[in-house]
Amino acid sequence: MVRAALEQGAQTHGFEADLRPLKRVGAVVTRTMGVVLSRASVWRLLTGRLGWSLQRPEWQAVERDESKIARWIAHEWPRIKKGP
Image (tube, rainbow, N blue to C red; front, side, top):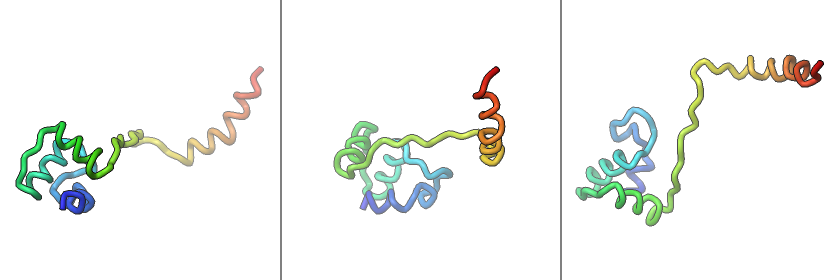
């Protein structure tokens, strides 16, 4: 039941981002099963019984423009790489 609840996504349970920090997982477990777990127990549940691993989100600048980066790599980098 816990796995199914977690696989529904964090937004289904009222959280903004689809991340699963231990505190949120503990809240979902409490709502689903009626059991309050410590952070250590939540960690053991995720990594042991469910077989999930730690994952960290990739952070990226909002201003990042992939097309400008590709253009810079194609035109500027070869010029800089040649050197004096």
